[in-house]
Amino acid sequence: TLEPQTIWGSRSGDYENHAIGQAADDDAYIYTIASGQVNTIEWMMPARLLVIGTVGGEFIMSGTTESDAITPTNVRVVPQTNYGSKAIRPILSANAILFVQRSGRKVRELIYNFDNDAYVASDLTLLSEHITRGGLSDISYQQEPNQLIWTIRGDGTLACLTYEKTEEVIGWHRHSIAGSGVVESIATIPHPDGDRYRLWMSVRRT
Image 1 (cartoon, rainbow, N blue to C red):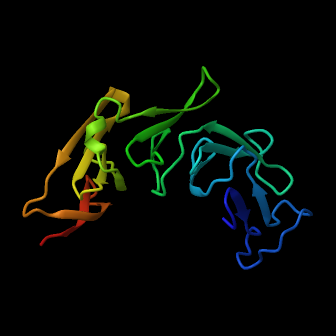
Image 2: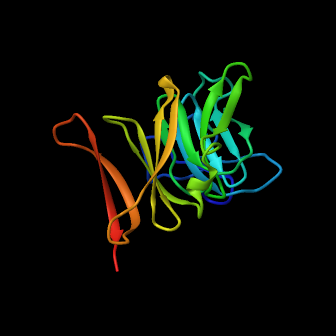
Image 3: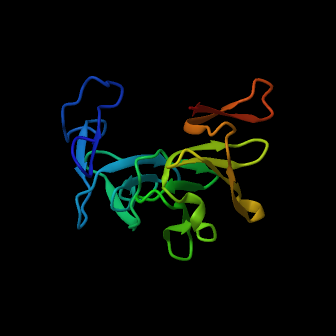
């Protein structure tokens, strides 16, 4: 982004050519989201459409119709929810995007709702609001053998969400680290044998 709530794209196939143009579909472009606020774009995630999370709300971006490509002269950005997003990369799980709300206390499930013909963002911490006390600073997705959403709380404690959407299983649990360990960062990577993912973490002990 060049400035708050502004989307910038480079010329296709030439990442060093950033000249703004309107003549060709692959020209670079700058597009400012029209809304009542000017907010920083925190993340962008490709899903059913391109989903954009800003400090003030969530948007979808496409061509004039959903099947059209985005070009300098064919772009449409539509607001979906107004919860606001924190600067933490969201997680794409099946057809849902899980993102941390601006305050850092809530994880929301952004998913397309056919009845509303729009995206809705349910609060996944509704029944466990206490577990994210202090806010979340990082998030990581472990796909196998179970779908787990690992997070780091503000006090360095691990909080994990078991997320099996098709089985309607959503449950939070906390994990303490021995030796008064404080978790500073986390990542999940596939195990070499390919049948599961492993959680890696950087832990500070004093």
